[in-house]
Length: 129
Image 1: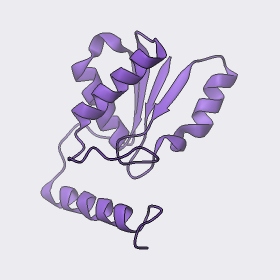
Image 2: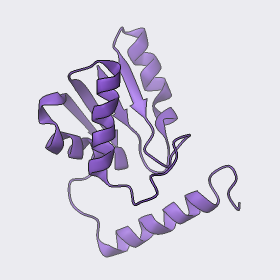
Image 3: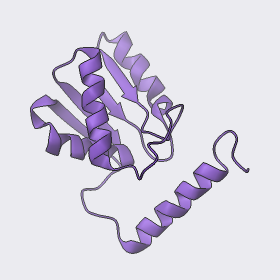
Image 4: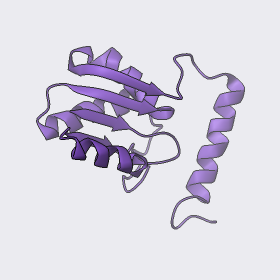
């Protein structure tokens, strides 16, 4: 089993080719949307990586999987590391792509907020753009 966490500002469809490759090789795999991305409604509060890790664990429960290889890219890597902290016994392996383990600087946080505002206002159907 493999569970994929997507990068910001994309959604689970970013993993479509990987999911098809997994299926072709007989590996069970799934990707989840973070709340507020893809077709998933926002939580109504800031998205925390611990919460996203909990949603990943719930996805494994729904799939009947006790353990999985956890794959995360960029923001998804933050979620994968949160998953490792919260549920290490459920992690069979980890793949971290284009992510980091250190906290963002104030400038990086400000840039991420600007990107989020743009994505919410312009990058989504029904936005102002």
